[in-house]
Length: 135
Image (cartoon, rainbow, N blue to C red; front, side, top):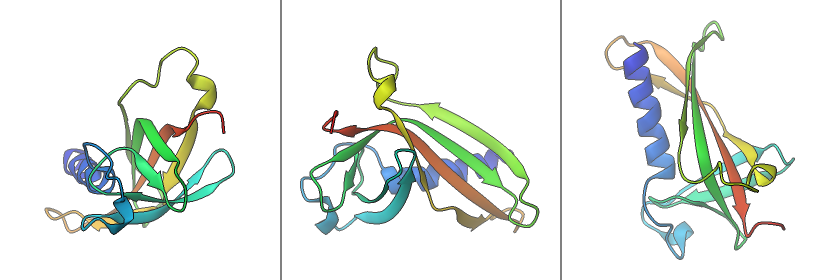
């Protein structure tokens, strides 16, 4: 079950954050995904991803560059955490970057495990920095 849930979590993140280069006008892209994220800097951003990293902040020239994703699977009936996995990407451990890092979380999403028929709720958090930095 944990393996299937992890595969579903990774598939969900790849669908949301994709892989590759951000599009110049991502909100009008055919594959654009627009969703809100709430961040540890007290801000909620509406972001768009179009098959690429970073996420573009809608109505701004800023981007959110992820350095680490955390996937948490929760039993929606009991609230019990089934598992949590963290995957690092990019250059988040560079000297001087740590003070600029924020944690952002997307709204939980519930999926049905195709093998068992059980519901699993996923929460995806990302540790990231905003560009341009220092604003």
